[in-house]
Image 1 (tube, rainbow, N blue to C red):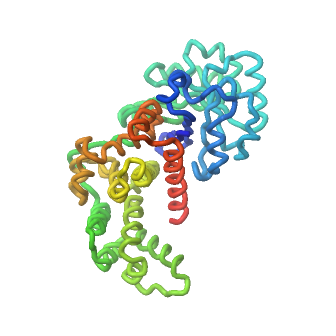
Image 2: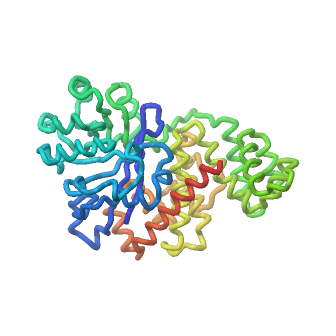
Image 3: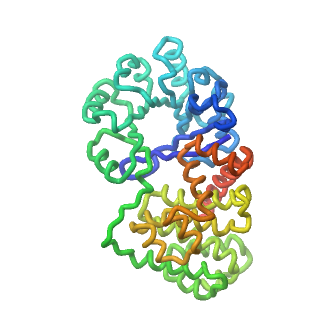
Length: 408
């Protein structure tokens, strides 16, 4: 099945939760699914199957995960399908779950079992009809472009003060700032966090210049270990991270210097570690999700190399994904941001011009992370990618990221 996670942020750009989007079939091989959203009519909840098979910690270390239910699956035995802690799961319904006694009673049962509830796609005209369901609901998703939040805030504060309001479709930083200043929403969903704030006069901090210099060194085919080690030594965070990793690998050896630690890793492993660790440090003043997005794109692109008949370019695809948010990290247009790092012409073509041999992988990944299943399905057919191959590539990416962050 197709699986992706979409983040929900609080006003400080901390992760508040993730929405788990799942599609079990290929839209183009099954046209009847086009109007059915994320469900194929079965009573089982695909999202819970994913959580059960992977473990909720792989998807999210401590945040809640929103899982969609339809008017059939809401009656299924959720605990039998997934044994994750109920308080970590938010059951997301839509208006297919009607405000009639059988649904209201079922939602009450789920609340007693410890689940939280959320509802999306509810129109303003339906608020009163859904009064009994809203009493049970913890989160309401609202299209901020179609609602007057000042009136909505008064309405919800008066009748449902326990409900958290979530703004969906927040497309840029200006929208986010305006919504935040309105004081009505608690969570925000949309592309805004990965849209750069381009400032012509923005000066890159000396620390980030140091990290970029390190990236440029290791992206040379035969870089000098000692030169890389000396730059690592300028940064306390990188030094501690490197020593921790090497100490785990060499329990019976005493590390005498940064150069010694670099030599023990060797050129290949040092390059791999530097590339991922430095990106994390570059993103230190950005939302944590930027680091996650960068690394997930990188690994997912690498994992898809074989599926796109590009196995020999796996390393380049990794770097393409990694640098795909460099404009956000440096607050500069992508062309200017990439001029600071040594990347291949192919990567520059993709990220600046939106073309080139690698672009189809980049396009596929960005459609996938937005749960644009119709376009993903179309590209799968064009590239002859089977569902299990794609699923494994994404799951392995999440597992890799989980291990990477635990190891830091």
